[in-house]
Image 1: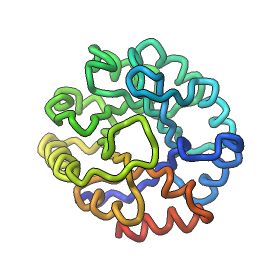
Image 2: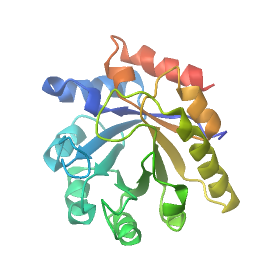
Image 3: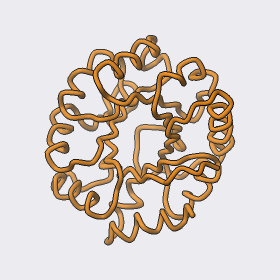
Length: 223
C-alpha cells in the first residue's frame, strides 16, 4: 500500500459529450484532481473517441492537469499536437502494437515539457516496462481491457499493481501508479491497498447525480 494521497482522475469518456465543457467544469468543482482523456484511433482499440481539437476545448474549461492516454498506433506522430492542445501528461501504451520505440517516445514526451506515462494492458507483463520505469512519472495499469467504458474491474490485476509498486520501491522510484477500469467506491480500496495512488473513474462519477458525493465516496473508501 502507498502512503501517497489519493488522486482522482475523472474520465470524460463517460461524460455527456453534448455538454462536455460544462461536464468538465462540474467535475473540476466536484473535487477531481486530474481530468483523464482517452484518445482512441479505431486501430489500437476498436473505438474512436477524441483528438487534439477536443483536448484543446477541454483545456479551455479547466486549469486541472489533463491526463491524456494515447490508445493509438504510432503516438510519436502526434505528441506535439497533443502538447500544443494543452495536455499536461502524455501516457503511451507499452505494447508494440502501439509503438516499437517506447524509450524514444517517452523521452520525447519529457522533452516537450509533459509528464510522461507508460500504460500496460491486462495481458501485458511488468517486464515490458521495467527498462523504462526511470523515464516516467506515471504508470497506468489497465484494470479492464481498453477501448470501452463501463466495464467490470478485473481483480486479477491487483497482484500486478502490488508487484509494480514493490519493483519501483526496490529501485528507489516513486511514479504515480494509476489504475483505470471498473473503479468505484467498491473497488478503489483494493486498488489503493495494492499500491495505486491515482484512480481513474468515469461511469462511477458521470453516471451519478452528484459528482461531489461520488468523488468523496471514493476518497472515503480509499482510507
